View 1 (cartoon, rainbow, N blue to C red):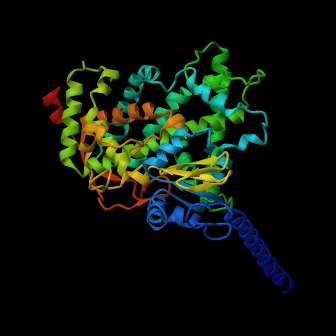
View 2: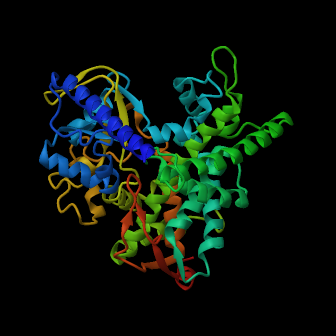
View 3: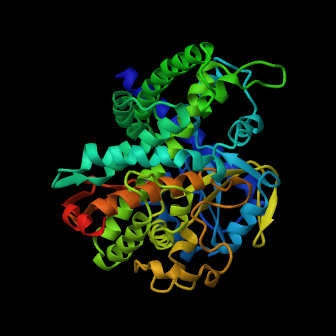
Length: 482
């Protein structure tokens, strides 16, 4: 009984202390002209509303309630300003590394930065980014050389997992494809058994990246941590294999090779655990968002035969100029203008990633309000994507909106961000997606099995049933064209 009383007393003491700290912090900020909004409950703030009420709805509700320019909240343990609209996009993109810098939520830090305790001397972030830039891996001229391989991997994927099937789950297959492409591009590996082992772990890990970092059995974060450990173990094996190959004279052709060779100013190489975590982050970037875009392409186009017909006509025209067995090249991609307009509309209605975070480097003022140093800034495309003043009839799927992109005011449609932190993988994503579109449309017609399927997920949208689609082979039609 005494033990119970003691425990109850401790709980009340902790709660009282938390409320006191919260009240002190709130009063210390009250002197500043903070944006309108609410910091929510002590400790948790408004995190539960943000994660489980869908981030897009969370933001739009508060824009209506407080301000269409900026509001304050507390999410994922951080006091946060949400800067909205085209003006907000421009302000953020124009002030990277001046007023704010990139910030990873605590769950993501714990998942991707596990090497810090074991390896305190790391390659600085600036040097890390040069590893991607200096060999030009993500520049169009470098990606062109990879495009043929991207096409052949996609064709093999279609033959293995799609052809001969009456029904498939589009989301699962899109993830298998994008991880295969990412492993080949970043690791120089195309071992199907290895990729199959990685897929399920990447699913658990990506779900935990924006979760509450509670490492207790059964939680999303616990599963994410466990999955990250399994991926890290597999990546260390790959790193050892790559080092062995390089010692025998193998060519340096992928990002992993360059990371193994990279040094800091003192000549020290990255620790193996650090390389594994950095590669893991790159694989996530090249895997989950691209797979999501492909999946919702299948959903939206599967529900619109008229749009499918226009994409098919464009892709048949591309294929008609190719010799038998010839792979896609850069000129082919440039001809896929309507297909890319369709993808723009897919990403407008269902952004593959809802938003990202930054940290204020100093106090700054926006829209008449002061944001204190150390606060976090949440940026999301959803503050403009469905605004009817920029996108009339915003819930309608209409690729013709992009026939003349000059009609959009600047900074209204920014699916890949902008400024110094524009997604470096934008061109990689475009090539992977359009290569997929070319191959799937040439081979199949399809319909969505459950048009009203619920879309789950918080920061990353996920069809609850995996988006089952019914396939109809175009083989007979294809003979008529080729």
